[in-house]
Length: 87
Image (cartoon, rainbow, N blue to C red; front, side, top):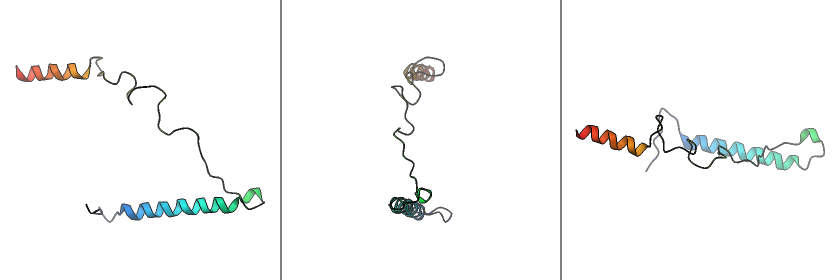
């Protein structure tokens, strides 16, 4: 499947641009490690935390992700909806 740009936007160009910028920043950081002056050293931020993770087990909706806003299960709501359509 061929990528078709929308309104002149080409995602490949953007991806290449971001990759070049990242590679350049990493190269500057590596080169600055050799510099004796602490003001010239580039810092790369790294975190030990995982991004967008939840500490609770379950779904993105929490541990009760199978319930609707009313507090009933999704499947029971579907069953009652089907019954209403068949009646």
